[in-house]
Length: 227
Image (cartoon, rainbow, N blue to C red; front, side, top):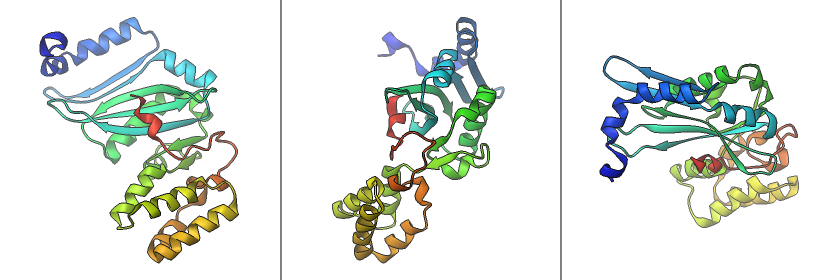
């Protein structure tokens, strides 16, 4: 594999040349690097064609996710993905960062919004990492990813297939009566889980309470795994 693709160690040493080549052959692109004299820290890439496409042909929302990189240096790949008018996945930007934390995500979103300039007002909604983005982009609708919410519930001790089915039933319900029916089942399983879910803004995770500006009823940000 190393003979075919080369060494990742050598590739990281050429990141400045790579950024320059990307800028040369893709007009309008943003390819930003953060590094010091010794260490590479972060890299952000947004192709101009992707920028134009998200503006003229996609829904008013973005999905955010992060993934572990398994090379010799580790780090995280952060990405923003949209959905076009046919409900197909549409990649927008990606970045390589040292770790997935509040600082790297805030930098990622601030850079993304700066690149899109006035067009960022088109976005009505963001999936994932709700607290972080209130610091860089106010006035948009935020939504939870239900699989991530379920993972948080499992960490608190609310496990099992029955609980998972009812939790997804609560989120997927399109009427208030169906929502209350599933939520009452959860209340019978665990009063603590019921109280925890009751405190979450219903507009951020319940289909029956979603606003109309967003134009999508997704309850998962897993389309971010396109990259």
